[in-house]
Image (cartoon, rainbow, N blue to C red; front, side, top):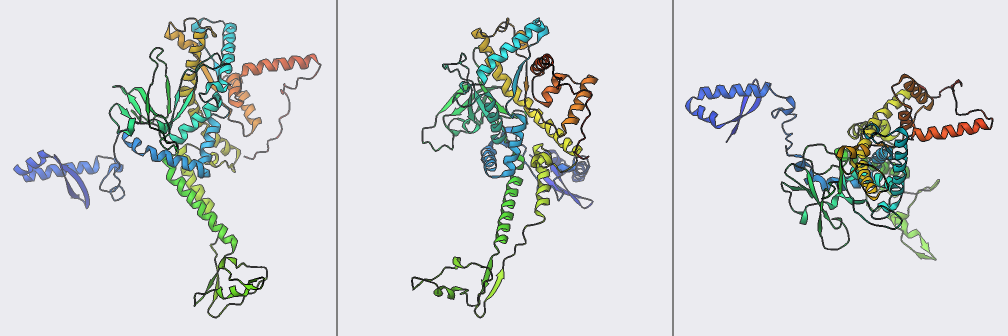
Length: 534
């Protein structure tokens, strides 16, 4: 048992915990006990972080909890999801931030480039090229068809976009890998997406040591099963709730049968957090502030007039002057309008006041920009990219794009590792088992299997602000040996250099055969002047 005691040192109150030994010493030798507490108070005051101080005025009431990852995330996750979805539906800034991330990370979809370990597998270059082309052809047969979707709605590119958007919007998403035989496709592997809300404890029970947030784990913390509700908890369909327990790994193949896509920020974290979680409050406040400013501007534009009257009647006496087919009709206050050059006599004691909110507010835009700079830092998006407004120099705009692309490429790498690669491994396993792809040793040696499963996932290019400068810099990097033509092609256009090279050889040969000048060779041409000011 311990007690807290406040000690004044140089006018500063320091809180020291008094242990049972301190109380015993105080009973035997009070002077010695005071010396012990004084020494510990000095240590408490000097040998610690100022940010952890509990006696300073600025941090005295700042007492956050110290729970584990699930203890801090799961109680608030339902509210965070609901507010995140509401912002994406109704707040332009929130929707724009998420759309920007999705468009740059996924875009039209990450494309497969099969890259087996040629050296370990002992493949000659020609044989490896033929194998890669065969695998990519078979992959397109499966991935470009809606048959891969359990709902027969999305192809693989659209599935990537929706899955990534769900991780940003809700924090996580679950992908099931069922086997469904369908006509027109030799493959039975399908993908089924489950929204994060449906994964929860059976009967909405409390979290336990081995079951939290619908994720069942073993003693090492590895997932072994997921508990999935038969419908969304907020669905308007009135059916009986039932939970299904799905193993995380297949019993025979040991491959993932359920993919849980989320970004882990702490050890032992069972569920993901929405992308907008750190900025939900400022984004909502900005949305409210924007609405208020728009309404104030509308009111100002309408030139509203108020009539003040000592008797409280206002212009009510004018209503009897109106008539329809000779029958007097009382007029409501809503029917009075200002007209061009109108003159209205006011009764005794009446006065006119014009509402002037002083809009548009000149401080509106600077304030919004100041807050959005902080929001952009939390979302890892530079201010210029967040609001899609480039007004600085070429160098500043390029620096903002490069900074943003560090974030985009990181998320793209995460998506390829967590989603694209596991799906490809499950698909290639079935393709080899069916005999459609030849991969000797695939099922006998894990190292050989790993060598056959090598890939690269290429996404859309980042684009160029000044294409001429970018191409010139890329040419210099290739000449210096710090980049390859394949890397530069993927970076600048998102394409495959080998296919582009083959097409370029074909075009050059045809043009030369026709006696035309090779328009693809720009060496020696004078570079046009750039219009972008530094």
